[in-house]
Length: 272
Length: 187
Image 1 (tube, chains in turn green, blue):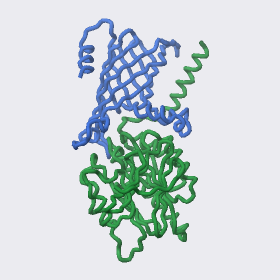
Image 2 (tube, one colour):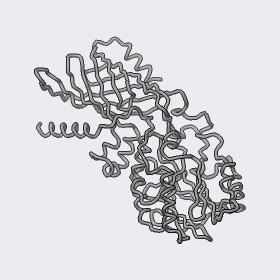
Image 3 (cartoon, chains in turn green, blue):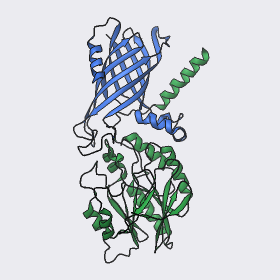
Image 4 (tube, chains in turn cyan, red):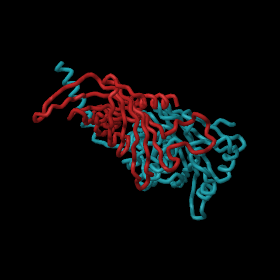
């Protein structure tokens, strides 16, 4: 009886100590997370670019759909930390399942183990509930671009169920334009969802805009395809369950993709 | 609809076997304030209906909350004395609450688009799993401390125990638990 009392007392005391947090409702939106903030990560990336300015080749890790498995996301991040050639990580959406504050915080905690900048793209699940407000406050804009070692990365929102008039093709085309004083080696596009069936010519349009490589997630399984008449490769990364991710290797002359499950093997796009 | 009909029947049924209570709780995921009207059967089984409120914030509409709760209170009771005042402690009650949130826009309901049926679970309805520790401080007044976990918290904690254990305190509970306090008046 004394043992039972002690166990009860320990349980209650643990819970009392553990529960200093008063969340008013499931739909709170004050996410305490700097790790995913775009501005901070782009500053970090800028420092890396300056530090290794003579290095022309680089690699990028591509991950997506970590929702409901922050443990596997943490393991994936730790695995990527050990890959020296990777300069930064692209997280291609669905950081959460239902768009609530707590899920954003768990994802944030999982990626806080990173030793490399992380740049995120919004997924359809991230915009549920108050998710889009949380995203704007915590992470940054839905559409953005940056240039790293003369390769331009253009991230755009294409979650048609949650947003109207996406993707913003005019904005994408403007971002893809090469200005007269710019030296650009490659243009890489990234969004959560591959071109929708209702837009069968989007890949053609993206190719005409000047894109060389597209990156997506959403399907939870690896895929790599290109329309044979267009030859714009679309790589879709798997979810991070059991540590899965992609690596994009970039040299001044080429872009290649590796599929990691968790060991990495080179893959080529399949013609459709 | 059947559940609602059953609840209306229960709450309008003049049963002498049920004790009636009014509860007021703050936080624990159910609003700044949440009032329940509840019926307890056999000293253990309690059903409650409630309404709550979340005030407007700079980036958040004010919200009305509605709830249906079932609570089970164990037989474990202790009585102790503080300054000649007898207090009965019922350390464990366990409850499940179905919470509905409503605001003035469509954030928590699905957008009116052509979304395949069943593609999303509506995010304006949540389940909350709670434990309460109850202190009967007067004949008809009980104070309680509430520990609540959101549905997705239970799912994630089960699937990712090591993650929570390694990244949060007290076996990861600090990552998922939210607290509340309440007062229960027996009518």
